[in-house]
Amino acid sequence: MVANDISDVRIPDSKLARDVTRFIRDTESDLLFHHSVRVYFWGAIAGTRRRMSFDPELLYTASMFHDIGLTATYKNSQLRFEVDGANAARDFLRAQGISDGDIETVWNAVALHTTPGIPEFMRPEIALVQAGAGMDVAGRGYDQFTDDERDAVIAAFPREADFKHGIIDAFYEGMKHRPNSTFGTFNDDFLAAKDPAFQRVDMCSVILASPWTR
Image (tube, rainbow, N blue to C red):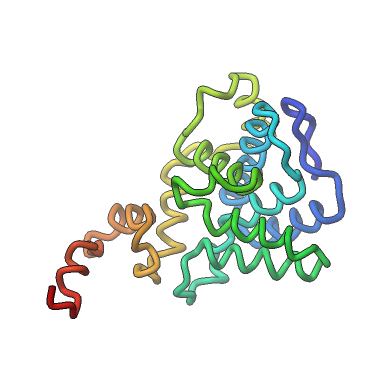
């Protein structure tokens, strides 16, 4: 799959990119697949506009794997879904003979994409996956894209009519069996929104209940 250029950005026309596309297309729902491709375009457009030097193949791979941890493959996992995705990307790239340094970049990009305040200071591929995901899910940086750019990306990789509720449901379904993995992230918001019985862990209570006497 190769899209027409959108603001001088296109999906890399390489064997690795084609293999990644095939793997994710066969694994994810339409909603997550289209979301992942859009994450790549938002990130790559932003990176190009900022004249950042990034590897399109690595950015594409990380974007495509960033939410695979939410799929049914990991219905019994107790890891953070981001770590499941990072590990899946690592295993895939190792089988492709990709260098350890590039694998580490992709691993970090996937693992840290829901961790605010850190990825933006790391390698461009890591920063841009977080930026792309934030744009597509929460509209962060929305006004930094032109109407033509937004329309072109959505036309090529449609945003479902009720994507907002759909992505919330996808997060919930991917994490409801591992509530402890959401501690310390905003992922607990999805469980709190969908499960009235869910109780957040309060760090102050954890500290006060620790075995230390003072």
